[in-house]
Image 1: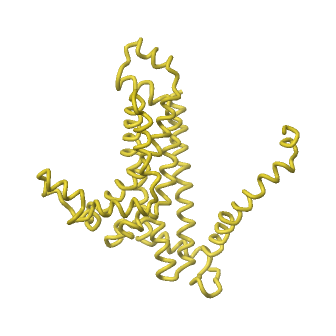
Image 2: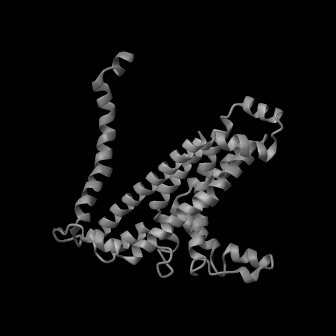
Image 3: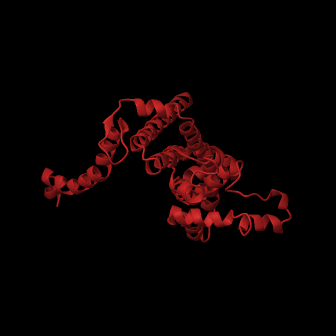
Length: 294
């Protein structure tokens, strides 16, 4: 077995199928997007090279910047609300002695559902008349808080953010929980001997030790937020009046509805560029914080 694995042809045999799939389904579309992003193309006729015109138009397009702002909302909601809640929930579950597996399964179930199912499910919950949320507010005597959640300017984006968080919280809770359970019991025992208990121990010991995992979750949240698409398409399709539009939905509308496929490809390239910039900024900030801690 070792002799076979030391043979470079063996590695080539295993790598080639994966590389072919990667080339066909990732590299080829990426190269095509690069080609069409610098072209005036309606999806039918031969594309005409127009240099940076598409990108100039995109950077001057107010709808692109509004869509980018909504992508940033996804990031901010994840970093400042979703991730603290994830850590809180993971710490609670890690201290449960009985049926811990049941709780882990319960929080992970939404992640198993497809985004289309999640979007339709929460669209029913947000329904202004028959929706569970408004019905619950009525029952509790808070009728003044009822809204047409997905159709009002002040609530539509928040409703999508909550739905998106509900779907992915379970996945990240499992990651954080694995990191917490991987901490040596000796560390916890030493902390307890020093008088650290409850949330003091969690804040002073647990959170710093799982920091690498939290940084990965933030990075995944940034990249996930920048490619947000399906949840918005299912729930509002960018409405009302484009207030929940994200860059990916705007890109699809430009291509499929207006036949501006060249412009749509330039927007897709901007999504990649913005994602790279945001992740680079995050890594720079992280390194500086680590340097200051050292």
